[in-house]
Amino acid sequence: MLRTLYKLTYTFKIKKNLWIQPLKICFIMTESNSENNVKFSKSKRSSLQLINTSDLKQLSKFIEASHAKTIISIRKKDGLYKSLNDLSLRTKINNDVLAKFHRSISNYEISMRTWSKYVTHDEIIFQMPATTLAIHVGPSAINWTVVNCDFKILDWDSRVWQNGTSKITTYDTINLIASITQQLPVCNCYVMEEIKMINNKSSNLLIQNQINTGIASCLKLITNQGTNNSPKNRLYLLKSSASARYFHLIIGSEAISANYVMKKILSDTDVNDKMLQRVNVDEKLKRKYNEMFTDEKEQIGWSLLKALTFMCIIDTYNKYV
Image (cartoon, rainbow, N blue to C red; front, side, top):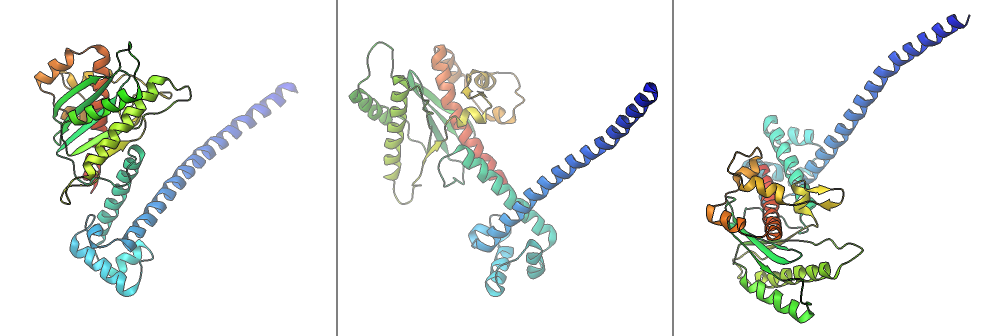
């Protein structure tokens, strides 16, 4: 009797499992499809909003000017487009052209989300600057790296601000900021990064933040004094730990050493990372780097990674538009 009952129970469990497993798969697939449908629906709504609000200059970034004129002309005459299908019916533009148009807008929005993820500045820069100077205020030195639009490192240097023996006064900090700002090479674009202030603030970290903010303020003042023909906003501020996040150098909530990436950049062997392959460092600068102390190398490395983070974001954006 017990044996018969056991067989019946076991058979029921097998049948139940055979029935539940396909149901689970079906549920996962349905859930995944639902998520994709939601994303696609949001993308369509976003594209439609851009189509209904953009002027000729904006639309021409994503579609030929002649088509952009047609879209705007019909929109002004007959009202806003209700859907992408409505756009197709009213403009008579080829479906392949419209599909490419929609992809371009979607890719643009992806790049904009990437920009807002890493950069605090609302206004995106559309062209790669001829030269970018990135500054890193480290625990003992102020470091900077200059990179041109071809990802060639033109120079890197540092100035020690904390030797661990003397106390830094407010007046010392002011003089240091003024002196450093005057020493920096003139470039088309300056990049800095917010310093994350932790709850247990050390006096050293507070001074780092003061120096960082002070240099950024001086650079902002200098760049705003340019002529009408020069760009007004040439200082860009990365969000806290942006360069570490971009290069996957975060473990938990802490950034690890930049040395891992620097070794790849300075290596004479082939590097798998296509972006790092583009970075060009001449032998003179390599020797200059190799002669530095370990902590100097680390801090110089972070100034380079800040420059590359900013440039890669712009490079990605320009590929989409």
